[in-house]
Structures are given as structure tokens and as C-alpha cells.
Length: 320
Image (cartoon, rainbow, N blue to C red):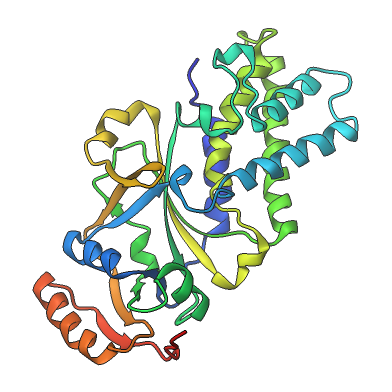
């Protein structure tokens, strides 16, 4: 079974493009420790990471929980009671739980990752509109000796040398519950509408169609699931560069894939490159040695041929 569905992909693209139609007016910031800064300046690329390899276990899973709630709400409202939509909703619910339907021929798993990674590859890099944010210095930059890299948001939308079918989005994270539900229900309504049209017009419609339709549309939904985050993180004002690779181009994607061995996890990444590398600022985080680092960093940027402005954080360095 092919997991490509052009209508599902087009609908997801439309939602993401509408959601991100206007870039932030100022730089967006990537908080990192010294090794991250060195890797970015040396390679002049931004490393995107497969969503399953993020530190937060709730990344993407939240999207499927939201979908599962939406499916259950429609079931409780009696949607599809008199046609095959009830079977479609059942298949969607089981897939969100990781219970793979017989038509897909995979053993049961406890996480949607089990079947999504056999179809599409979704990679993300994270940025923030929050400048000089104390909580992000602590969380993402190690507390002391960290850096915030300021990027041009318009240029981040333009990575180059990607496989032709790769979809690229630069989108704000959705934190508010009502906004998350609106996006999920909009997608689910279109999933049902397309299924009903197929039942009328598709000559290949059969008793297993609802299984295949659910799998294809949830595969496309994975791109939307990448933009949801718990409301407790709203102060981060996060934007994400999202690369969606088609399974038809896996061989080309593999040529550039990178890997990081971690404790208990072998992570995978894809480097995003740009015609004009969009680094505009480098902010040196709270530290005992900001001025020393400032001089060294000026030399490093000059050596790398980068013309970013160097700034110092105003956050106070504290010892424990």
C-alpha cells in the first residue's frame, strides 16, 4: 500500500501555510551550548532532528492525543452512525493508539512512530521569538557558557539542495488548546469528507478502504502533529523549521543524513543548508567570561566568513 495521498498532503500544506503566512518581524533565536555554536559556524548549516529523537517524549504524541480526542468526540456525537464513517473513525482511533489494523500488516506497537517512520521522515529545528530569555538559557544553553543564535526568519524558509518532493515549512508552535482543537478538527472533517467522496466516486472503493484511508491521512497529519506543544511552554514563543521527506526519495535523503549516539538513543538528523546562511546575531549567554568569549567569537566568525553581530546577554550570571 502506498502511503502517499496528494489530497491529504495538499490539505496539510494549506493549513500550515495559512498558519505561518507572516514571518516574525525580528530575528528568531536558537539557544544552544558551545558545541552547537561550533557545529553551526563550522558547517554553515542548521541541523534538523527527527521528531522521535527529541528530548521531550511528548513531542508529536500530543498531536495524536488531540486527534484521538477529536475522533472520540465525533463518535460520541453519532457522526457516521449510518455509514462507513464509523469504521473510518474506529481505524483512526486505533492508529492513534498504535494498534495497527490488519490491512497494514504490522504487529501492534504502543506509539504511532512504529508505522509513521516506515512512510515519511519529519525533521525539525527549533527557534524562539523570545530574546535573552532566562528560562531558555537554563534549559537549552546549559546555564553558563551558552549562546543564542539570531536568524533571519524569511531566509530560514529557503533551505536548498533538498530532494524535489520535500515539503518545507517555517511555522509557529500552537500552544493554546482551542487553537489546537480547531486545527485538528479542520483536518478530521476534511478526512471524513474525502472518504465520503471516495465512496461515491472511487471505483477501487472496497471493504478495506477505510483502513487505507485512515493510514494515509494520518501519515499526512504527522506534519501537523509536529507543531503542537503543551501550553506550559507558551513563553518560549517557538517557531519550527520543518522538513517533510517523501518515502519516494529516501535514497537521496540518506546521502546527507547524520547521526548522534546518545545514552539509550541513536539519533538521526538532516542538515539544512542555505544559499545565504541566515545567521544575523550571536548572543553570548550569562557567564563569568563574557568579554573573553566575545573576542574569541569575533575571531571565529571572521575565520568562518560569517558577519553576524555579537551581543552580550543582560541576564545575570549566578553561582549556586
